[in-house]
Image (cartoon, rainbow, N blue to C red):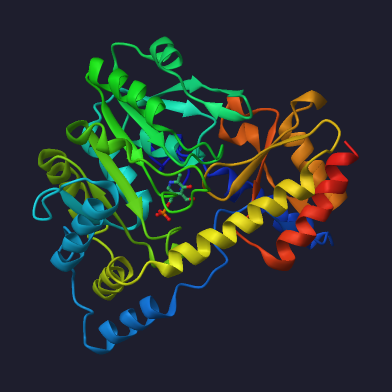
Length: 390
Ligand SMILES: Cc1ncc(COP(=O)(O)O)c(C=O)c1O
């Protein structure tokens, strides 16, 4: 059936992780023993009280079509969470939408807001799965190349001003920021908010790593500075180790949420009803499980730092949030993709090359500590040897 695929779909690209996974399978088939520090998938099991809530809901027959906006008890629970933790007030009837993960929230927002030819500002290096849905909406990415300053990637108003054009409609921000580990602080967010305001933009705020921050850094929702210009996007995937449940939520002004709802109604029609019931329990029950996972991530982060510190030609950036550390290997002046392949084939450890997140990520490697235990221990040993041998 050659020639039957639409030009729209030809713009879509697999994510870096998926491309690397294909290489990993090939190498494994050739006999390589590999340990992966690549994926952004927590190795924790979903906390038992959430699993039990889903089980009970299914047994009670909560298996019919959900309210397409999201079941009202879940929209209520999300509104209460946003009030309690982020100081944000949203009307659950009109300003909240339950989505199939953050992925669908991002997609729905882009489809609902963008005209063909509009531009989206994307700080770089950034999570590479934003690009394809922007293309699908007929819009264009304008990157804002960011640099490492004092050991962290930073985004300044000056850089944003240099990138904006009259066609720019949206700034997409991710804090804590995948892959860099930067958590934007108050003054940074104030200057970004002033920029968004001045240029009449919409802020798409992906806050999926909100719960994973390391002392003294704390998450501030960018939407709290720009309530009426923001679509806040969040998910249960990372906070509650629920990646496979496919559930998330968005909050924003009623007209935007209504437009996103129409997109959702023509496609996913929302997460399963019993999954939504379990999500209510996740939000309303004690958040001790979240605190426990955060503490474990903090221990892993320290282990990554300890293990990779002091290697000649490599500097490890200590993340402020999320579960990725960036290794700065720019001094080797070799493409990060080449280094990534060498680490895989000669030292048996899989990471992601920084250039997968855009040219501004060149010269870095993303090391995931979403998995811990023996995997992390062995992976770091291989990585230490591999980086020292570069
Ligand atoms: C920055 C960012 N946004 C969104 C997602 C996708 O999240 P979800 O599982 O909720 O669709 C990821 C997953 O890795 C991510 O890193």
